[in-house]
Image (cartoon, rainbow, N blue to C red; front, side):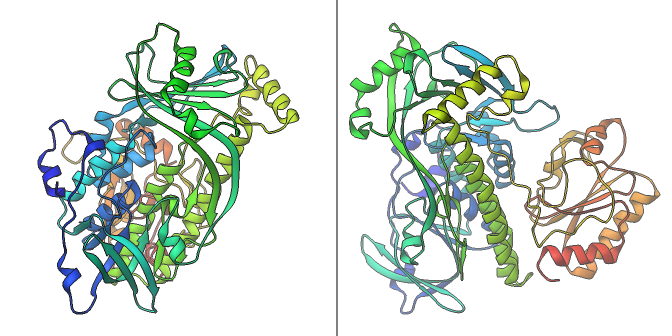
Length: 556
């Protein structure tokens, strides 16, 4: 199958786990001298596909190389957070993800056989997307691949394995192996999105450093009809699986994901056998439960990262740059956020709108985010899998207290779920000169809220500001907001940077947006192309806004 054939089958029943894409010889393989491309992305998983789509939507031609010719199998990454769904919206496939996925907000925590409390990940109203959806990774890759097929600036080459990397001052030369032999390809920039066992990282002599956890977990994808709500259920030391933990999630197609902690001494190959899995599932569900095993895997995990995500003209994103334990759904979500951060910066530099220094901020910002994810992931893993008697006694005492005392629930860590990093120390931020309340500080991802669109229809704030460039949110309808809108226009002209202005009235229909942004008449928030806030003002003049735009493009 060719990629364009997949796009033509959209709407039909497609088994993404069984798709096999055809290798095709490319004219670059017959070129007398290596062809030169602006950007080459290595790895067509969720991160590489998201990056390629984002670049193509910004009018940057991109070659996407993958050493395989299939999509993933089994559930693998399944929990996709609200922020990732907002990114998928901008990439043109958010509706497909949400329509197919299982939306959930509620999690329940059990100690032995008793529920000790529940929590709601999205307790406030006024967001277009749910806190999380559960969706098997093969669907995510399939929907992204279909979107990539619709973009002519993406050249996806299956069975093209990078076997050599030579870095030069102004480009990178890749040696690419194919079923018909090797060829060379030059790129102005290369993005390595080739996973935790990254060959790109190895070819450059780089390594990820951190901590490996000595424990094993079994993933079992079980197909069954189970009368339980779409919630996250987590058991500590249940009667049906003593001294270990268990996690249960609903997925589409009546498939349920069950994670069983096994301990370090478990034999991975033995534990994957049906005769070992079925008794564990029956212990959870009951002896009369009817189910089918769809897929199983045994995994270990680490929390680690590369020292620097930028290596000259090569950038690392997703698992190739950093790895976390699966507790908290931080792997795929942070990888997609890496891609979003890198895409607009690469586009700006390739198209001559920003200096190379802007690309340095990719490493600064995403290394900071990786450290935050690793910290949270490590704490969750230490709580879930105590490695000493003292640690276990502490954990169990916390769980007992959490039944009745709210303060203890803040200490329970069954995997605090992924939220986007607030990039407090980013060199692209303009520091506050005015007083504000709330979470919408420079470096934060802009929060969604309901709005009334220009045509009078109900809409959403982030969908008003998801174009490829900078956006200014101008609050109010009075004289101050009119002055602010003119200042934005003058600043954009002076900086030579297109800026879309979104006007948000201070009326009842927009009260939630005003509250979330602590807005007054004339308040301005400047959003980067990735919807992170890079500055905010009560009263902004053109020179101040122009300076903020230049700073956000590393042109200070």
